[in-house]
Length: 490
Image 1 (cartoon, rainbow, N blue to C red):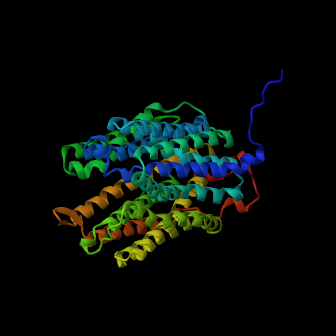
Image 2: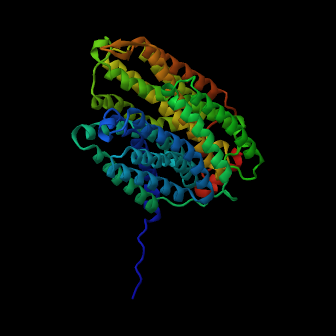
Image 3: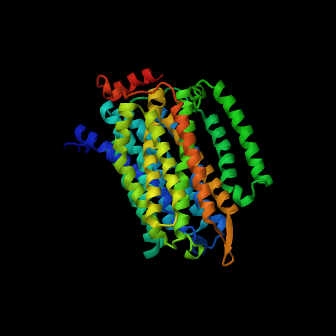
């Protein structure tokens, strides 16, 4: 009797599916991160927990994502990028199922921590694209993959708001569970495993040290406004960050196969790219935070529009569409002028967007225009960052290096959230017994984010040794091309 033959995609079909499958995983990851936002005001009532406990449904995802992104990136370089990518999507799906089945706040926090593993999807996918695509297709694919973060965030907020408004809130997590299971299946079926590997043993001590340092840092930043920036807990966390990361750096420099190659990070092309990622993450995140609060502010403030959360999500939707449309342009600029110029241009466009926000934050069409301009600049900047990293590091370290770059964006976003909250709290006045930020406070937040964007532009222009894409030379495809470019980048 003949044995059944496993069904697998043909090489041509697999090649066509690689980019859309990876991009859908990135969009799903961003949707997962934002779907809980419309729930936050109602979760204390729905779970019987305090507002402080409910805030951990966001904090837990931030912390686990920051810790696991470089760790899973390194694991992907060593043990197989598709394997680790599939595992990250599976953890995200398990977390969604847990959220769908429970209303207990402890279970929800643990589930959201599991979902944070999906933060590694983008750097792992970008590394797969480098290994598997020919140079002439790689730039546009990487640009699209980088843009999925903004696209998914723009789609996730109105989608979640609609579900919360018209259905039971668990429905939202059942939906992401189904999408997650489909993503796991599609990734395993359509994406080839890269043969490019980094030999050696996994640096467990380095992973634990980095996790401890990042938890101290991000916990202090995210909870500083609640606990008090001068409180013993926050100051102790920051002191712990300095001590732990100093010991971690020493351990990494003395390890033969470190989790993060710090000698590679000290190269200007890599280190300045990480600095630009941190600053760009700060500048980008302020747009979403401030826009959502501004348009929902009561009309009695004199500037607020009193919009619902659904309408707020729709205000951010044009930015997500713009990110999708402008990703090919970003790839074209990087191919002809170099990703350094694309990154600098993107940061400058972000600053222009905030200038529009300062000029007029009362009219809805101007608010949407300013937010969309910031999203356009973010597309250019975020699409250029992984290309800079891919050109500067060996092929066997692309996932871990891009993981560190994404980590820097995450740290920038966390600091941005804390800084914006501090500015708005300081410039608030009571309205009906409730403190409400003033328009001047919002404008100061825009000015702060615009100044950081200009700093990101300056750091981008300081990156040395960048030029047109290597794809303009003789075409090289597959693993051989990735290895050749790695030798050039190194």
